[in-house]
Image 1 (tube, rainbow, N blue to C red):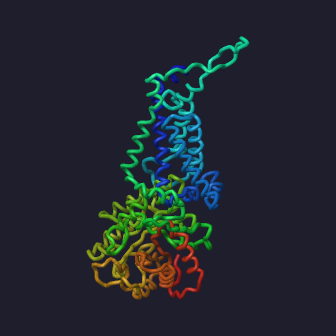
Image 2: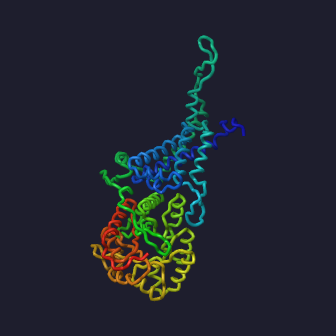
Image 3: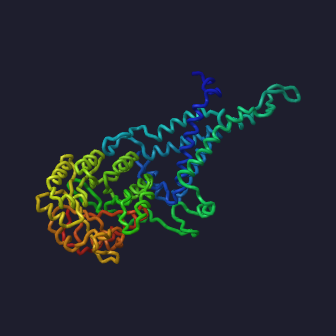
Length: 509
């Protein structure tokens, strides 16, 4: 098609819509990052893959450079998005957007690494970043200037050939512009209604912010401060540069795991908060997808190589792997249908599966040992380790008595010398009511043991809970952590493992 037809005013509207849509996306990406006081590109950079991974990780490791990168990223998205939506300096904005998307693509290129099960949307070479980058190349070639503020700027700067006072041809003189035709003015402002719709949509989705809160938000450091009431309080996150070493590893069959495993309850929104009924919703709100990805990437940077969670998060795991993440997925297979949840977990790339503690407790009480055996067989037939969990020690004992031999055990372990511990069954505050008996019995088993609920859902200090679990015989500990706790908890685990432990059970794995 001739270029004159492509660039004629009547045929520019598809390119204008493409430009405005991409501008909307960029602007919203900037907005959600500004809205999140804890947002940083650290996780995305740290988990980068591909030929430039070392450079991106260096950017994340340097606090000063990272701060600059974060600001450049947010304000770059904001300015590019605004320019594309309003159609001002469209070609420059499109090229700047191409540069940003190119960096995103290079940080996590979807090349040939195997990242889990075969699910819808797997990327190979081409992903969303590359598609949008190519769309911006089209916008740069055909910026649809008739539908944006660019048209007014171009019109203002138009010149025409004329003659100077000496009558010499070729001199350029400003032309008489005259009044702007109404149709031309309206088309030049085509992006404004979309910008207005964007503002209304954002306010509807995120709420109307009080003007009184804006000065506080303006003073907020997006990486290390939080706001409470009318007071700005500093909250410092420990960074991976403050790690005191690397976590040691153990094995369950051929599966190599860090001695500390990231627990998935907080990420999935299952918070044991006793009588604080709002906490589950709070935890789910905090752990939006980007925050989960940042948490996974930070855990990897700290040497944690596995997360243990429910099949509900299978899609999240696969999406993280698509971005280049490597953290392994251990599934608890929790749900109404045990065999169905096992198969779902395997299909989505689980490296190990076990019968979740609450499920196993129930199946043992009902005497359904055949179903448990079928679950273990299904897991092993797919070539991965199979485990049995239990909140109750009787669950472990009965499994052994009925000849069930898993590849590993999951058992709660924590002391009960904390003030909120109560034996009343309606209280959600004790998960290992006979810890000394648990330690004594688990010492007789030869299979690896992953201890969980070692901090009694936040009631016990890590330095106390970790030592109690490792001295009690656990080979691994599964710990639910927010992103800002990971570095400190890993350091506590390292100090514990590197000290003299009063441990009687031999290390398995």
